[in-house]
Length: 81
Image 1 (cartoon, helix red, strand yellow):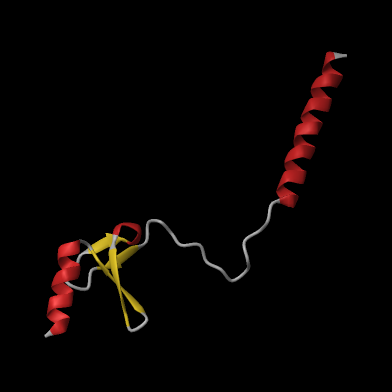
Image 2 (image 1 turned 180 degrees about the horizontal axis):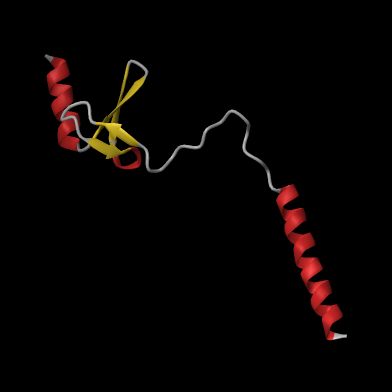
């Protein structure tokens, strides 16, 4: 008798997880998730930094990344000359 209850509970959990997976919205095709560990090159000093931690500047539609506020300002001063 107890074995039947255990089997029903396991089947119920399995059914629940299957339905939950089917109803979960999927990601649009063609869309790439950004990797949190992606490294980008600092345009001023040449160091690599995690993209999520980088300072960035939009330059003519292109994002330029920097390891620090100082490198960002240094690039702006150098590019302004």
